[in-house]
Length: 591
Image (tube, rainbow, N blue to C red; front, side, top):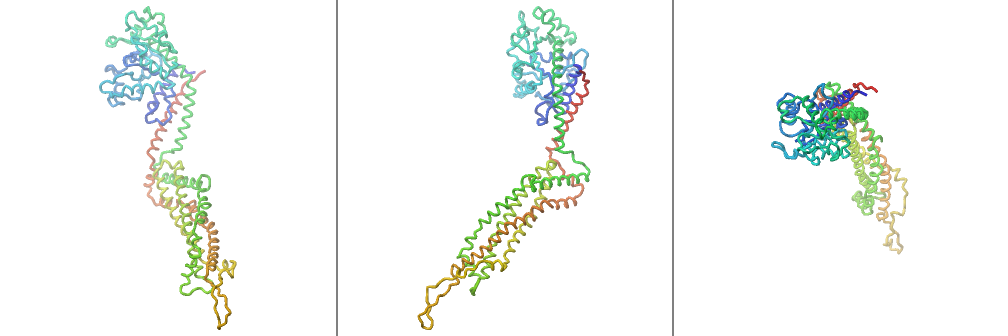
């Protein structure tokens, strides 16, 4: 396996790449993107504002670098904080990376979190107490975070903010290292052995005691090397802590953390590598779905537009041909709605004896028919056939609604088209205008089929059975002739039976026509609407595109701003993961 320095340096470089490319855990602009940061082993330093957290960090690092005065490094941190927070006293979750190179320290990466506090200072919002705790919690609750919990020895360990929080997020203590500061400031006659030896509060790892520089030492600019030597002497010469001296102090703490971090990294590298490779595949797949950036060349733009139109057309045809749902709804119109509409037509009322008599009488005018009321037949047939026009038009309209819905669904299901809302709208408008033309053609054809049946041929009526008595009725009055008493029977050709026979004949003709229209209307609709939609739905649009100026193509390919942003986020995150993969590959791995 690679050396300790190589492993920890690797994690450090990947963390830097994460921050540079916007990945620093949950939230932020990449909240809906995969995060690499949370899978990386880290050490987060947690403590109250008076716990000596800053001094511990500087002691481990071996340099004065945290903002206290006007030194160059300290000032750079302060300036960077101001750039992020806008020169307010608020906090930001965005990490600031600072590298310190020295031959006198181990290779280690630490995250210095804001000190936990209970009261907001002047210039801070009242919510800052909860904001700080929530931000600290967001780091330390991650399973890959090693917690360095700083507690002052001159305070009751039960009240330690760092221990309280670490116990909440790491109840088993397997991620927590306890550090006890200010041992030299305890009251005379007291010591912290109960804590350091694990009797007051036991952790999975031993507690480490630290003696920081005093404020006087800081003011006198006591060198860190000198401070570490004084710390070593304190533990070695202390009657209370001499037996623990080899496992106390900032030097020991730094080595302990470095060794532990290396062990964790060794254990996590395979899973991190697997995560990186898996996420690269997912991001590349999403970018393929989103599509590449639109070319600036008008010829390429026209090609893209036509390809997108063809993609939409394929999806639309799949709906009609059964590859996707939708075409079955058209068959449902023909097989259920049209026959049901025909059955509801009021032919019983229309062909009642009373109405037939009325229509025939109006057709006869002042000259009643002698044998068969031909004009009456024609009027009855023409007016009866007109009832079929309503269902015919309704069928045309119902199929039109289905086709419009399929256009809408097809646009939504054409993946490459989703990023171009302007082109979506243009295709929808062109397709719906074409469907309107097809509907008008379908309506006129269906109505023409109905009107054609008004032309009567004699063959149908010749084949109808004739009932010679159906129109006869025996009269009740007897007429005498030449004074004789003999009577003669008079046949009434205008009785109800006669009109029932007419109604029966017309009904049979209308039924025959209705049976034919049940087949012909769907054929007309399919021919004029469905087939035309499959064949030439966007033909007019293609002609319109051909007449456009080349400079107008770009407008049709205006992308959805959300899609533009998503592509940029995915590219940035993909760059991060590839960078991390390259960093891991660059490490010299040995058995």
